[in-house]
Amino acid sequence: IYASRTHSQLSQVVTELKRTIYRPRIVVLSSRNNLCVNPQVRDKASGNLRHTCRALVKAKSCRFKEGVERFVRDMTLSGTMNFR
Image 1: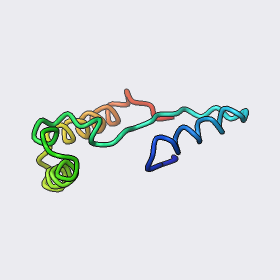
Image 2 (image 1 turned 180 degrees about the horizontal axis):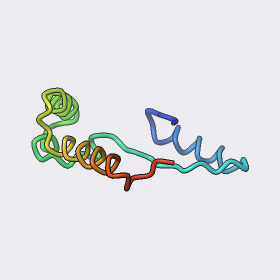
Image 3 (image 1 turned 90 degrees about the horizontal axis):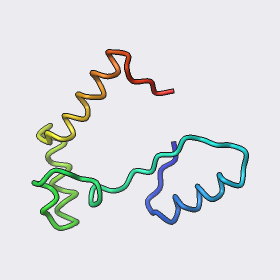
């Protein structure tokens, strides 16, 4: 797992990995500002977006995050999701 705060840092890592024989699976995840689908959160300004998102997640009130967690749990338990 590699985490970065900026897209330019991620691009640099991908470029460096391409120079090696190592070919890991790569998934780039973006910020809440770009990926959040919750209308309660999306309508907020950037700073308020983070605060609103964290508050909903902490209170387990974000139906989207709860839905994803339920999906992953169900798939993992049923054995249909392979994380190798």
